[in-house]
Length: 436
Image: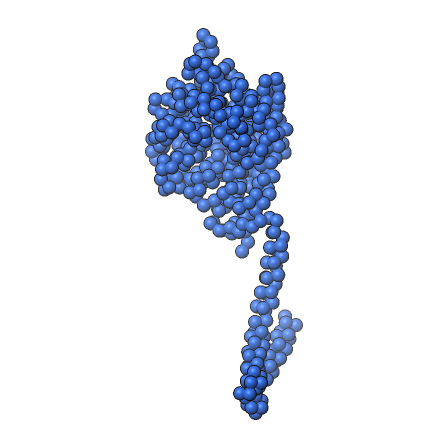
């Protein structure tokens, strides 16, 4: 049976390594800062992008030798004050005013293995900032009092889950997300009651699936199937969520300023991560294999993927969803990083190590050749077997003294007739082959 699709662990790993190589190549250090900015060609690192860069290495299970430098930079940027801003992180455009979009990513980065004990206290303070800025409806906006949004709530839930803090906050956020699910489909939009999107459904499913009992297995499966139906291999964004834009008012000294936030999103890879990470839908499906291969095929020479609104500039936002999806695929489908999966039909695939693939192919070819030879000579071989048995038994009985010579010669009549018939059969078969 011929495979309908294949996945190579070597190819997956190479694609992940190229993406991480892009981060290594664009790593920036300036006095007091080390890491990345949203646009990787910008020489000055930023908080959120540096946290996302560390997340890419950790989710891929790859050690980054400059992690201590990035962690030190992140710790130096944490807000220390006596008011509600204490413990949070800001972005360049909010002038020191902390927001959830930055704080959640830093908490996720510091929660990962390899960031060291230096981040312990900062991690606790960051998690406390997230808890303190949860709205009274139990969702999250950019900070306390801003409208609750699905992406923010799910992202903050992931941050608190990974930090091991905020059980009470998580319980309330879980209820807010479940209540905000679309009434007609097992999916979510950007806000409760809005039209569902792949992007918001994916991150909500990721957050809720990590909370035992939050969703039934049936609901998770329906949501994952809803996502799988809408994934289009090679199409990484959905039109309605390519960029999520909204205003964030904040206090800049005595001035009330407004920051227009624009979050670039890649719904396709995030949906793939949600489907593979939850484990409620069989990953051995044509669309899953095609989607993973399409991610690798659309990776640019520099190791990143195209950012729709700025296609000429590499961005950290055009790395992390893809690294996460490829890492999830490698874990969910392949037994080792050097394995290869050949999909035969939905739910059935051959997974083997690429190290022994050639040897296995050689053995399969030898076996097939042997089976073909036996199949083409099955009548002749059967006659030889019968002749051997009918000859061997009389010989054995003669040697054992149970047969006389007369009985032995009589018993050989049938084997001799078989041998004559066999010779005639082989000659007829040879003439038929020559005539064909």
